[in-house]
Image (cartoon, rainbow, N blue to C red):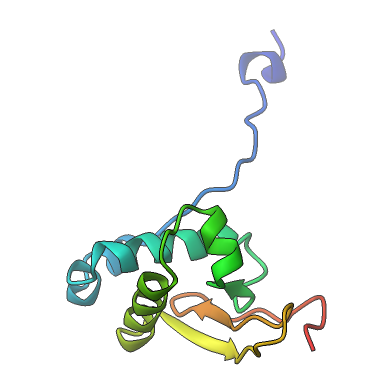
Length: 116
């Protein structure tokens, strides 16, 4: 029996992972449930080479189940204040220019596509 038939290929799937040392921090433990949900939604956008290009804009987050833009704003502010995300580009009111952010425990990647 060949090795390949004994061990079928595993599918490479993306996953949303938060490192153990981050989950154990008091700052994470004390986050509101909405801020934790937003952090997971931002990590959902991360694919390994685009840190710094995540967006918590209302258009995207409404599709992810967010019901209130003010709750979304407060959760984003909480993540900023506790140091879990940083803004990499300040957005504009113009459609198509959202505020972009990065997850702080990962290095910020160069944008492959210019956003400006």
